[in-house]
Amino acid sequence: MDEQQMNQYLREIINTMNDGVVLVSTDGTIVMVNRALEEITGYTRDELVGQSCAIFHCDVCKAARIGGKGHWCELFDVGHAHRRSCFLMRKDHSYVHVLKNASLLRDADGGVLGAVETLTDISEIDKRDQRIEQLSRLLDGDADFHGMVGRSPSMRKVFEIVQKAALSDAPVIIFGETGTGKELVAHAIHLLGKRREGPYIQLNCAALNEALLESELFGHVKGAFTGAYSHREGRFEAADGGDIFLDEVGDVPLSIQVKLLRFLETRQFERVGEHQPIHVDVRIITATNRNLDQLVSQGKFREDLFFRINVIPILLPPLRERLEDLPRLVEHFIHQLRARSGKDISGLTPEAMELLIRHHWPGNVRELRGVLEYAFVIAETGPITPEHLPVQMTRPAHGQHSRDPVPATAGHEEKAALIDALLACRGNQSKAARMLGVNRVTVWHRIKKHGIDIEELMTR
Image 1: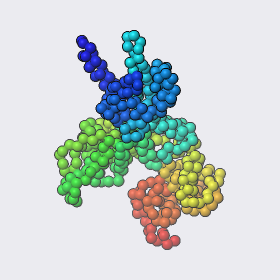
Image 2 (image 1 turned 180 degrees about the horizontal axis):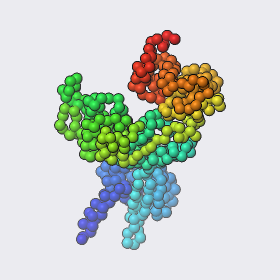
Image 3 (image 1 turned 90 degrees about the vertical axis):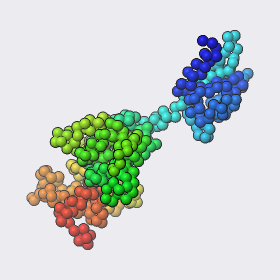
């Protein structure tokens, strides 16, 4: 092998390196760069070779040039630089954080020919460390993270799994009762993950019938069915390059489950009314408040799909199992409501807090927020007292003994709580649903079930 071949091989080897490499002459002129250096800086090889290395405006290099004694740069006095943290200016004038190693190149007689520098881009590591620091502050109880608040052991475990799940591309499934914060967990996974710059698309699978759900997920072409007057992009297509969150996945019909399984296996799907496969790069996050094992045994949920989505499971504890977090949650929501309403409400009296602690919380954190929203409507100033709480908080829970000679039935409790919420929300069913910790459809069903006339109720 002659010298020319050897040099060619060396250039190819250098170009395969992940770290940027730059060779400079004794006067600081750039002699050679590799492909990684081009990617890091945004400059091409032709734009760099022959230029002064000062083109990068490196903060460490500026100091080294000032500190140089017999040479233009301190490197030629010291002879090396090891893991120096510095910021380079890219071609577009943005800055990139790198770790620099440098060493002098010498000939056989010890004479200096120039210097070689390797540059490792650590900007992604910086971003990851910032996200981990945010999560660590949450674990220490100093802040909330996207609405999730808690210092209980069960919630600390959730936060740790969220951090690890975010760094993976594997499917995530979130189990939890209604109102435990599954949507917040899904969004946190997206914001912490490497797809955070991509889209985040979510869909409640229980809110649509089979035909509409298929169209929402996969899109349709014009004329695919009655009412399909134009082409429509589906949620999977819109989520390309990002994450898609399918809430209440346990309610997906079996026919749609087959298509979801096919997508998970092939990363392809077809629009309704079309047979042309579409490939997208999407990570799936799902959630459910149902027992999928039981649904599988009943033949209502495909076992193979369950195995596909149940790669990284996250179990959210109900509020009644982490009551040590309740005071902090109360403080968190009161702070938000005080800022939004402008009311000077200082907190809860011990008697009101005792009622909250004794409550069973079937609607979990969402119900707690609704209770406090109700209290902010009723109270004017000072602390929240038991009189400011909804009726379901001041009556014993169903199944518990009451000091009242005639205990209220569960149906009466439900109707009374619904009326209280509707009155507080001036008949707005969506707001009443949030207050009760249920969805709007549930409120609508309860209104029909109990024969409540909204217009008549509002005239009271």
